[in-house]
Amino acid sequence: MSNSVRTGTLKLDQSLALWREAEQLIPGGSQTNSKRPSAYAFGKYPIFASRAEGCRIWDVDGNEYVDYVNGLGPITLGYRYPAVDDAIRAQLEQGIVSGLLWPAEVEAARGLSEAIPCAEQVRYFKGGGEATAAAARIARAFTGRHVILNAGYRGWPDTWSAGRDQAVPPDIARYVVSFRQGDLAQLAQLLDERKGQVAAIFTDLPYDASLGQAYLQGVQDLARAHGALVAYDEIVNGFRLARGGMQEHFGVVPDLACFAKGMANGMPLAAVAGQADVMAAAKDALISITYGGEALSLAACVAVLGEYQRKPVIQHLWRAGQRLMDGLNAAAAAHHVPFRCHGFAPMSAMAFTLPSEKVGAAWELFLAECAQRGALMRRGGLNMMTFSHQDSDVDQTIRAAAEAFDVLRAAGFAGSGDTDANDAAGASGQQVGPAAPRQER
Image (cartoon, rainbow, N blue to C red):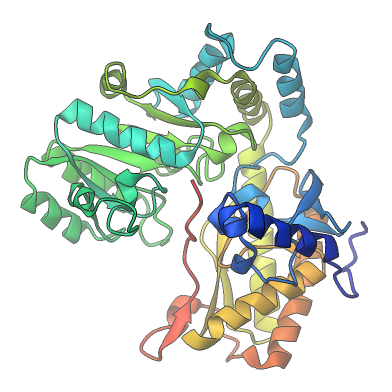
């Protein structure tokens, strides 16, 4: 496909036909809630992929797109990235799983311990939710305490879903208490109320730029004062914000951290990494999975770590991501659409500042018009940059978005032209899209 913006009607006949069958055979039609077509622009946005390469993806109807969804985050280097695919093929020649350990288990652990500040020891899993649940169990085993204080979304396991899912026994909820990210006063109060009961404090990337290092250091200081551990959810921002995640970027090292997504460039792999004395609790705790030593994903992880070591991957994600953010914001301002791209450049979020009843329609129109012009984005973000996104891909996307904003303006979604969503929202009843959309685990 050329770098020009695509025009014409987007044909999605094959996607829609497959979706009708999927609804009959699969609960909800998809294995991943965030991939359901209702989360995008149903009937005007592709549903099924046929292939992918670099930063581009093709749907089953033959349409080509620059992709910023990237599997909800696992693709950091690019689809079909040669070094990773070669490593998978080489391991496939040797085997996938066995009754013995594979050298790749040690090789990946060695590489992760060198890349991640807190990682003195590592345990592998297949998904992020599994990793965060395991981290909670490790923290409880190490401290002999049961309460977890948590800010943010940690996945679907019972550990985190009690009180939000009627299928989970509600009594479990008393052992996981939520606090507002960035609210150190609330966190201190909860620690005082549960003195001697808190095993760990879990938090993820503080997407509010006014937080960052001060917030993470405050969490750590409060945890130390109360004998609790600190656990970071680095599942989305690991291998994006920095190779070692927010702990490397902000310089505050936790006791435990959970990684997944980008650590194997799309292969199913997650990990809990942590200080050796804390991780030792995993030796005797009931934490064991058949596929923990699955070798294809571990070989991919080793290859990913090598690429990050040899090439300026992180620098590229920041530079290309900043180009996208600046271009989207300039295009929105030029068309007087109250939209803002914000957050961290390698994984920026997007928001509309509109009356709450108009936000959903604005997103559906924006996503549909961008898809029509060959760019796939996700409602609210995050725009997942890869090492394969080049300036020409980003520029094509900005042109597509500019045309989409022109359509939004004509459809009545224009505002004052002020794209700072935080300043514009407030008592007027306006709504800003999510600062950091929930990412599937």
